Length: 77
Image 1 (tube, rainbow, N blue to C red):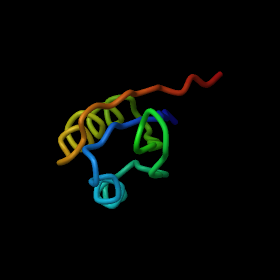
Image 2: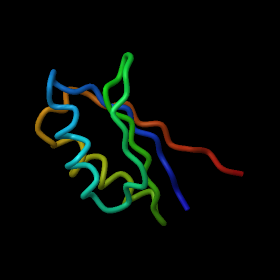
Image 3: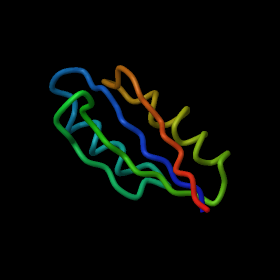
Image 4: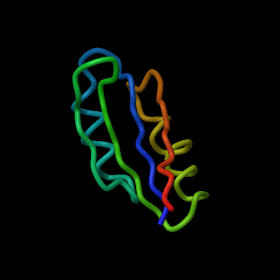
């Protein structure tokens, strides 16, 4: 199983809309609005790195209101 944390910066006022849209994306296990440098935190899981990449690049990053993302692939032994 491959997993990743994705941190997102959102346009002001669009955080909750982004969280609701992300909940609809396959492979999303958790999503939270957060305070601090980033506005939204998401956890993805998938059987392949390709499907993780696909979800992040074609579904998450294209959502209205997302200004930037930071992806951290989880390293497992």
